[in-house]
Picture 1 (cartoon, protein in one colour):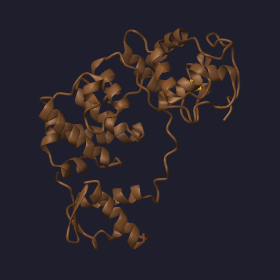
Picture 2 (cartoon, helix red, strand yellow; picture 1 turned 90 degrees about the vertical axis):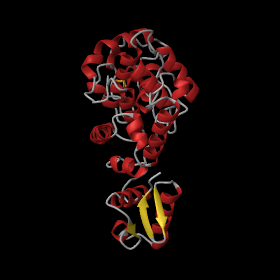
Picture 3 (spheres, protein in one colour; picture 1 turned 120 degrees about the vertical axis):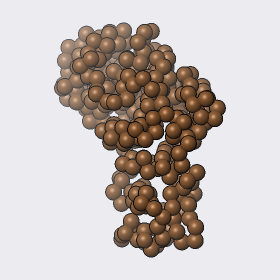
Length: 304
Ligand code: SF4
């Protein structure tokens, strides 16, 4: 996609690279106008922040709000989650896909209980020891829960960097160093949040440049050309179709099992129109991933 029009450019240099200082200043100025009202933002509990970041992996923000609230009500601390069975955690995960994240979060809660005295650690290296916590999630928790001076680089931030800052495709190592260069010295968490808010609301896969408050400070908007965001580091590829996917079938089975154990025959409605070999593969994958147990022909949510 090409940028549709050009406007005066107060911050973009002749090299095409943005003036980072001016961009940073302008983003901070508009931050209060673009802040999203999400229940985990500025939450006092680091556990609440960690849960939100795990749920937000590969899932749209709007779909996370309700399950996050329900999950936090059921498991307000790492210890409460660690002491529960995996089946209870999978039940509380209702409404979200990618159930291996629920299992990893349950394991992370047990690591927090057993090795960190039930407390979420403050630094990135310790956070990376938790199951299901990769580089982005560790940085996000360190920043948003503890105000650590680290940049966060997700798909939203990756698009903003490629488009607004340098107007070209960026490699992974470049994206990291550009994000670190852009990071302010103070109030890093608020700045990181503003970058996420900008990416999520304006600098989307299909950008809303005409409404964007950073339009006059955006390198791509100023200079035009092909969209540099696709294939840039940190920018996710389009998700495979959910409808008709094995992911959908796995979700249906787990939904059914939340009501209690089911025989293969009782699970038949979850597999309407699906061949027997594919059904067997879906069931086997759930057992393999440790989400479901099988005894003879009966399937149940895994307890451990
Ligand atoms: S949405 Fe804003 S930051 Fe993104 S490309 Fe358009 S003008 Fe630039």
